[in-house]
Length: 246
Image (cartoon, rainbow, N blue to C red; front, side):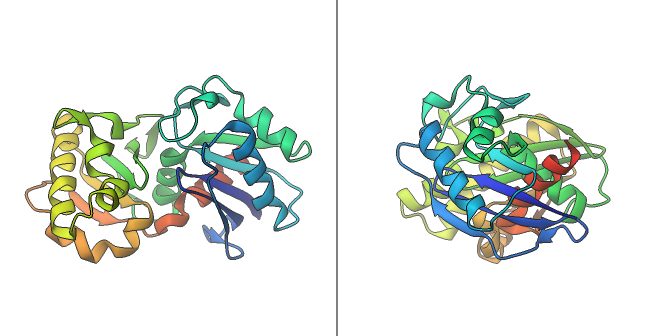
């Protein structure tokens, strides 16, 4: 069965039909740049553009980079603050001509996909998925069950939010080498490990495609650290899974 997934990020909005038997994209994804400012109306228009690219007419799952309870946005760290308290499913469903829309936190979606089809499949105990991009998203699992909306990228690290220090955007903005950035990521992982004692960290986001450049540089973390197998498509797959479940 194919279901459509859309992943809203701070820099890009991408989507595609997902083959839920394989846990992979059924067609190559379509991506547009996230509008700046990323207001609800403008982002909804971009989501509609991505979905229209495939002539899709069924259920749609959408990830959002913030806390989502029910279908209401509660935080908006890397998009316009106008999203706060918006019923995202109703807004997006209206722009999609009444298609049924399911909305969830972006890292939660990626984590569910990785736990079902990817690096976390079959793993028990405490597993934490971290997505590095414009910010740092997190998904926490205990014996395979998701604890939603953890948003661990907003933990304090060196006197500031961790994602301001160790996200991919921080690497790009400060022109950090892989070694310099890996040092920051290690400090962040050590902090999260101190709080939650996970057996496994899954590192996702676009940078997971280059895992060999930085993961071997991260030392002195007890938990196993692996790259996401679905890489930056995990959010799209997880969004489609949520829409199918709903």
